[in-house]
Amino acid sequence: RFDNLEGIRGSAGGEEFLKDLAREIRRYRPEAFLNPETFQDHTPVQGRGDWGMIGMNVTNHTELFYNWFQQNAQRKTEEIDMNILRNALRHPAWWGDLSHLSYITTHDEAANRAPGASGAYVATLLKGDDSSWGFVVGKTRAFSAIAMLSGSAYLDMPQMRLLQEGDFWNNPGVRWNLTELASQRQNRDFFSHLSWMIRDNPAFGFQNFHPNIENHTDHNNKILSLLRVNYRTGKRTIALISLNHQGFENYRFGIQGGGRFRLIANSDRGDFGGSNRLENQNPGNEYGASGPGEHGKSDSLTVPYLAPYGVLLFEEM
Image (tube, rainbow, N blue to C red; front, side):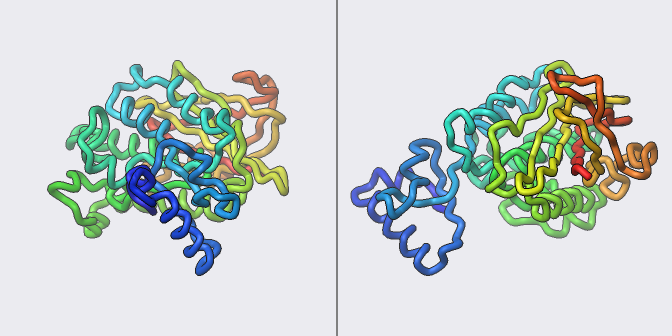
């Protein structure tokens, strides 16, 4: 990762230095993943080095953090702006620039005290206490899952997965001993499980990134679904994410073309600290999508129970 890329580019000889550096890294390790911290001039930064450009892999998906998370993470459910989120998910495709690094917080956002949700670790930004800790856990999972499941690359910090409180100024080290606490351990286990699901599923590979990942946005209930596709096999993976503090019975959302799906990840599972209610209602974890349709799609899938801030991942069978 290259910090403050624009500062380097703006220095005398900075642009040529970066080209030389990227070329030398590629000579030594062609498969190296180069992430510059930059929020502009995407094509010159990511363009091929042998075409006279810098030749790095991904630029930061700032619309997701600055335009949405920073503005909405501390809001009440009814105040969350789903239009900003929908645009953040679709804008990279409008640019024709799909190679973005998605994130909810990096070292900068946890250290810089900008307005809104920045300047501390996520658990502190969500302003929880003993009476609302469950909402902090749920919101951490739901907001972060959007970044994990919608992009071509993803970045987070151990402090987020461990629900560590504080900031870099007063609590800089990773407190690994937080896993001795049940909610922190269960949160880490959920993110580990979701990470494995992403790693082992070609639909989340960069080569299968596509411009219509936002499958549906429910503005009233603050729920969205994401569509990922393994284009070699045609198999679809669908994420359903709720940003609502209330649960839903028999929530139905649209899917184009029907199909049968298996539930492969659920943030409300018992071993993740949840109610396990969905698995109890449907132990087989299989779901069919059929008519009538919803949200402009030909068919729909009904989920018997969607937990508050629930994150569900369905894989086509």
